[in-house]
Amino acid sequence: MRRVAIIAFGGNAILPADIKGSQEEQFERARQAAEQISELAKRNYDLVVVHGNGPQVGNLLLQMDIASQLISPFTIEVADAMTEGSMGYMLQIWLENYMRKLSLDKEVTTVLTPVLVDPEDHAFKNPTKPVGPFYTEERARGLAKEKGWKIVEDSGRGWRRVVPSPKPIDVLNKRIIKALVDKGMIVIAGGGGGIPVVINKDGLIMGVEAVIDKDLTASLIARIVKADLLITLTAVDQVYVNYGRPTQRPLRKTTTEELGRYLQEGQFPQGSMGPKIQAAIEFLEDGGKEVLITSTKKIKAALDGRAGTIISGGTP
Amino acid sequence: MRRVAIIAFGGNAILPADIKGSQEEQFERARQAAEQISELAKRNYDLVVVHGNGPQVGNLLLQMDIASQLISPFTIEVADAMTEGSMGYMLQIWLENYMRKLSLDKEVTTVLTPVLVDPEDHAFKNPTKPVGPFYTEERARGLAKEKGWKIVEDSGRGWRRVVPSPKPIDVLNKRIIKALVDKGMIVIAGGGGGIPVVINKDGLIMGVEAVIDKDLTASLIARIVKADLLITLTAVDQVYVNYGRPTQRPLRKTTTEELGRYLQEGQFPQGSMGPKIQAAIEFLEDGGKEVLITSTKKIKAALDGRAGTIISGGTP
Image 1 (cartoon, rainbow over the protein chains, first blue to last red):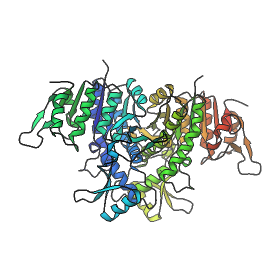
Image 2: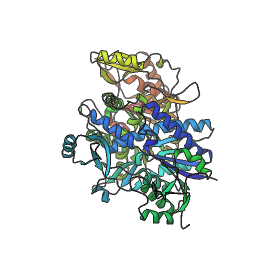
Image 3: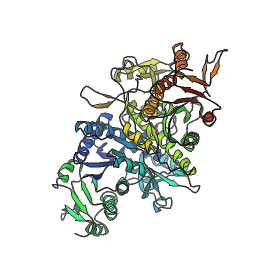
Image 4: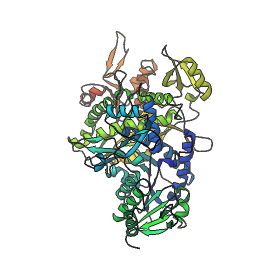
């Protein structure tokens, strides 16, 4: 029986803080991710892969800033498009290699993904997401004045730009993504949460400088392709309540109803598990069957029911 | 009646040498290109768009070089993937806007395109294509030693790396591109000639540092999607014989047989018109109906038969 899965993971799965980040190292991480992901293809899932791009777009914005005397830098949504290229390529090549190794007749492709956000989203009035290089206070104030950026002091490490993080509401090329998944192809889409665009007052689609949460985009794409399963990879093997406290307790099987209660209690902070839980609930309330939250290393065990947190719709 | 066209143009259509190259300027050039291209959609053509990336990948390699003390630079084929992202995005957004303006029910997408080349291609023994920044002789010799690059002195402007320019032989995600074209979607593919990959001794697909001629890739994709028409945009309004000489003469209607003769006479130099003519002949000899070579500004006139060079198969 044909089943559709979406798998989402952070950019730090490919470029973690603890590696120098050479091209070889990033390709090796992409290979490892592709090997784990191919486990789903083996189990007959049609697949969409959604990756984050935090460390990668940070590096790119820094490169463009350092070279800005010579070459006009691009804004963040063009940089997003570029990381959909570089990261998509690394994952695509390795997924293609694994499909051949497994003799699975699936082509792999990366699809550049503009994602519509609402220009009236309250995030535009309150930018909170730090992006790009750390600056000295002087340079940051200069850039803020010159470019209209909002800047913040980031926990003693320097000054940084913050951009809005609006909610994704539609995918411009959604029929294309669905058509390819329906043909059994592996689609890498929504990388970095997608390229944020709005429809402006003249009715034109235009990019905006913002960052979309990749878990929310994954949940949106999951609903578009009518996925059965949404898999969210994270640093921990499963979801915990009272995380980091003596009363910490793993959640192995839970429901949207139970999770909704924990979310309201403030169990899942906005910076980390919050958007993943929110994405899970939205997906399940819109017809999705199951959400799996686990770490990259536990995918196989989790698919066998031996690890991870499984969330299903409704009450326990 | 459904017809399929491929349109190919150089990266300098979006980033010409005579502009500073701000993001705004590049988007405006992308808008102009999209406006011209949409003329084909209006005339009921299904479309694949292939763009070059020379100036864009040059800028990116320079940015990565300037920042290389802080961030490991990527090699050229990853940079190619990144320009498929940035340029694809600019074209995709504007094509999407024009499709909406024309009320044409076509989604637009950019598809990251790995293109297979032969590791035994003689180009790998004789790299000739200059890429990336100009260096001082000292820095160039240092990089040549450190990275095994081949370098050349480029007409008094400094030292540059040269890379192989092998012939494209297959497109990894060709079924995906064909499926989308068959659904009437507009596909941006093979940007920069595609991302060059080989199958190595272990049977693995791996990227290689090379540049594929975008006109040859366009011709290959044209054959994959069984296109009727291949349009090649260039700086001149039509093909000439004895170009730049007093006996210069425009070719308005010609055949592969006639062009093949001129090509052998050396009428079309390798650096400019040569690959376009070669791409045209390959396409027409493999079942294509017609090739149109013209400038961006003359697309509409050429489609009406009032400009450009039309090439058809066979003898005149």
